[in-house]
Picture 1 (spheres, each protein chain N blue to C red):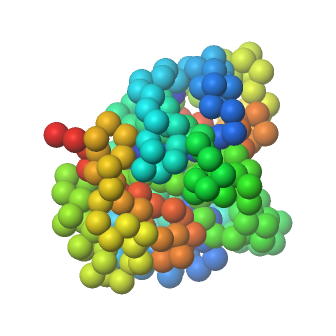
Picture 2: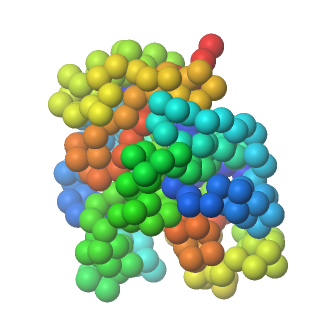
Length: 134
Length: 134
């Protein structure tokens, strides 16, 4: 179903502080930055091998990331797996009985197609599927 | 400093249930299984591209993973980055002011050398460095 780990998502309160921290202390370069209104976040992708660390800061208190920060504080927010065909992958996990947050793909950063699976049917792990733009 | 995302660690209460779940519903194959006394866990590595999902079940209530489960419940526990030279990587992050949980590497699964960075100096993200056995 999934090709590889595309990225981990990290919820942060201070985006610029986090970018500087990862750059200066862990040597990870900023590769892309985007406001993703669909998810109510500012997102910064840091380069790590073929994958990314995605730093996420909420745009408003209604953002899911804002709710996460309020209840759990900064830290690991989700994991994303890459797929070549998100429609087929979604159909497969739906057929397997996984509850979906997104019944159909939404537009993520860099025009990717993304969908989230509900953590209550993935052992507490908020799980994202990503089909990169071609 | 780091080559790529080696794995994400997922804390689980029911290891066999989690293995079956990832296999049957998400199509991830069990690649390796090991009791890692050093960390008080049973660990199962699932294959995903070049990386892994590491399912972790505690061996006792004193295990860090047991404490995590008690306070936060099952879910994302840590992220691990691969390095070719963990001694040099640890020296680099220490020099950058990152607080270490492990001043020197310990032995992880498959005779890898591993060390954890303290989440309070990595934005709440428990971060592991892994040098695979050669």
